[in-house]
Amino acid sequence: MLLRSLSARLLVLTIFFVMVSEVLIFVPSVARFRMTYFENLLAAGHIAIMALEVSATGELQQGLTDKLLAQVGARGVALHRRDGTVLRLDSSNPPQPDITINLTHPDILLAIRGSFRALLGNGNRVLRVLGPSATDRAETVEVLLDEAPLRGEMWDFGIRILELSVVISLVTAALVYLSLQWLLVRPMRRITASMMNFREDPEDASRMIAVSGRKDEIGVAERELGVLQKTVRQALGQHARLAALGTAVTKINHDLRNILATARLVTDGLTASAAPEVRRVAPRLLDAIDRAVALCTRTLDFSREGAPPLAPSRFSIASLIDEIGPGLGLSGDGLTIDCAIPPELTVEADRDQLYRVLLNLARNAVEAGAHRLRCAGARENEVIAIEIVDDGPGLPPKARNNLFRPFFGSARPGGSGLGLAIARELMRAHGGELTLVSSTGSGTVFRLTLPTPAHELSRAPMSLP
Image 1 (cartoon, helix red, strand yellow):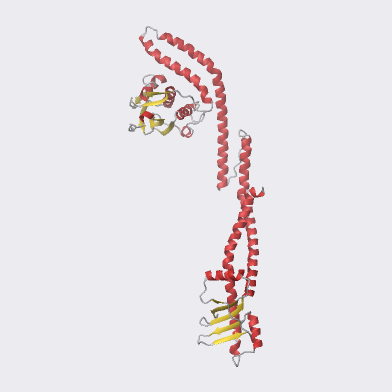
Image 2: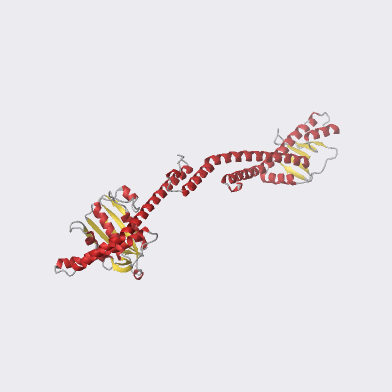
């Protein structure tokens, strides 16, 4: 369970990466230690061989020579001068070298390879090391030495490096662990706890996260979580109101349909009136009552999950636009509707529902103060696009920001904001979309899209006038 926590994993990874870094440092460090060992040995050998220069005979007794070589830690020392002479101190039985190491022109790769070969070996080779003199680069110092003492020194150095690496990794890991625990893990646990607490009762405002005011990514996550929780609470409240609305509609739906049925019976009698004007208006009144009955029947469907049921048919969009004016019930100068949709442009959709969408847009335009409504339509590849343009004063910023949200997107006082939300739901049920193109002080433009009927896909697309 401990390794499943984020903090424990961070601790283990920190220790691991620090140890990897120390290993990468260890390799050149060992090579440098070996080079320094040789350089110190050459310097000590050079000092020892100076005893020959103060000797009157140019030679030393073997006992003194052995003492000097023991102090140096070598089996033999030689100094090659620039004039070609050689000064040499040798043990009583000088060995033959197994390998020669030239430090005159050092190579780091060869030094690393030689270091690991010496470190991992188990024999006692005799090394012949050549290097420039510390006082005169033109002179060369030569030293014969055993490899075993060097290997022991290298292992001691490696163990010290390992112990130091462990200490550094533990201290670094502890500091990183505490820092991450304070800066990241604890805030993440707080955010997670707030999410779990909010999940238990989203409607309780006291369960919302208290933003800490941090400016980093954790602060952004806290603020975004707070916004999300607030949005969820608002959505739950909205759904509760919609549920209450659906319950109310269910209760009044039956009585309202009975009233409309009575109105239709009365209207049926008007069709037999002797007055020509009454007979002319009666069919429109019957259509309006039929649509009202259908609206009552389907209103309950919008309070349920899923798309509303469709009754698709093929019809001309232009003929549907012609019915909007009478459906508004305005006087002749209340709203002028210009239809720029070609009569041959047809769609396959639920006629009553599409009429409801167009009527809602037209009614919104009238309520906003528009006097002219222009409708344009064209087929664009796989969709049929319809644009509704009015000359009203445009939508206020609050309405634009919450345009299709029920109870939030109303542009007039007292409005519920349900009209456009239901209109978009109807368009999406058809496989289309309702979007706001623009809204300025000179008017508002809405765009409706519907799938192109299959038999018209092969035709050339048209453009909006």
